Image 1 (cartoon, rainbow over the protein chains, first blue to last red):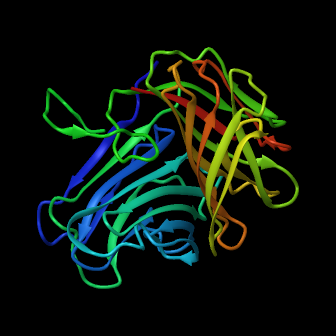
Image 2: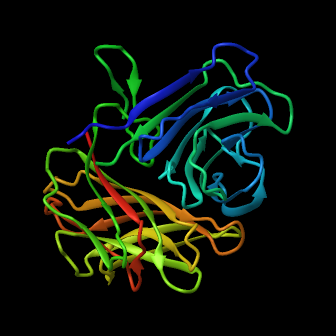
Length: 164
Length: 195
């Protein structure tokens, strides 16, 4: 059987001034993409965008914070909160696993399915819809809401999965 | 579980849906089904090798119907269409979270969530399903699934679920009936083996 789940690119944050990161020129040769993130922020929220598009996003979220479970929906957004229930921490404290199934097709809208765990705060799951039929060629992460940086030690790895 | 590479000294973790990191080289594509014109009432994988530790299904599906909505899908193992499956689901519908649970005697399959059906061809639903320790003949087989649909407004939902097949047989085949609807053309289901 063919081995897959291939690392495409890894970004390791080793300075104290990083506010954005991008995976660009994503190969179109896989079936699915998986982005694995382990990160912390000094302030703000980490937003995820596709192909640098600043519109056409929506998501439905399920989360629990230790005392209650709830669900929210965000429509007509400019990106996705990778983790919107967490609080900022100085070191890598949030782990997110983000699935982009069938990311290269050009006939359907794209889905984004992800889980985020904010250590000591909450656990979340999201299903997102990006209302574009374009193939995903770049994934962009940016801090929004207030000024902050991605803390050193954070790491983001993009994998490609190819179906037989 | 953390695993340390003897070569690099780095640690990795399981790549299953509930965990963050995969080990490159330990994940293999077994088979893929893409639904053709006319749709399909079910999708099957047979002759599954017993050489892996876990299986993972990655789905990108849509049901065929003329009205928008959501429909369920299930997994049946080794052609067992009985009701020896249990399921528990955590559901987010955008306004509230809820949970449902069913013991044996109710459903004839393990849950994999619900998929979108619509006259529009633009929205498909993804799901990632782990079938854990599928060759172990000393215990029941367990399934963990994450999947959902968002439609930029009311009508979508996310489900995080677990199921048990109350049978100790090793899983050698998987059938995914499409409930009362057919899988629509271009729906795809890929089976992977994880070590």
